[in-house]
Amino acid sequence: MRLICESLQREDYLKELPELNFSHPLIKQKVNEIKWDSENDSLEYIKRAYEFVRDEISHSWDIQSEKITKTASEVFEQKEGICYAKSNLLAALLRAYGVPTGFCYQRLILGSTIDSGYCIHALNAVYIESENKWIRLDARGNKVGVQAEFSLYEEKLAFSVDPKVDEIDYPTIYIKPNEHTMKVLYENTNALDMYLNFLPVRI
Image (cartoon, rainbow, N blue to C red; front, side, top):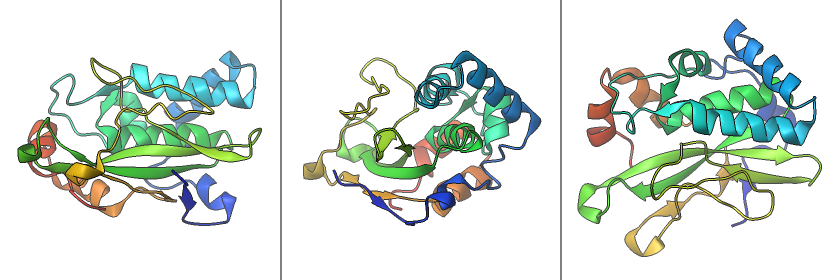
């Protein structure tokens, strides 16, 4: 799929935002840690940051937690969040290092059948300077049936989209997190109830 940038100004994908609060001491500390481990190699930094969020930050539904996290620092501190929150943390870690990072979305069936309804799923798009291209990375978290990986040349996302059942792969790389996905985080207090009943179904 051909990705479409919301803005042609790459610096727009580097800005700090309320949800991407990468000047927070906890985020700055983690950035320095990943930077050290990757020996300041940009591609290695992106891969390590991605795998940290994917593997070390739990998806709230997977661990059946009622906790809701929103900002990058909250997600990092609590070590959990749904995809909306985890994509905020990954964007913050990458933007803090100077890597342009945006937000992408998919419309997916919430459960295993159409009867379960739909939801909007969040992931990230990252600009790889050495390749002069954007790639999508999904830090949702792997489990049985879900195996997302860091890949430069072949997308290995958490979910594939089936247009025959009205699932949608949105091609736009957005500068900011979607207002509907953020609103649902701020308006709810129980992550499990929110996940089952209140996730937006369209961007």
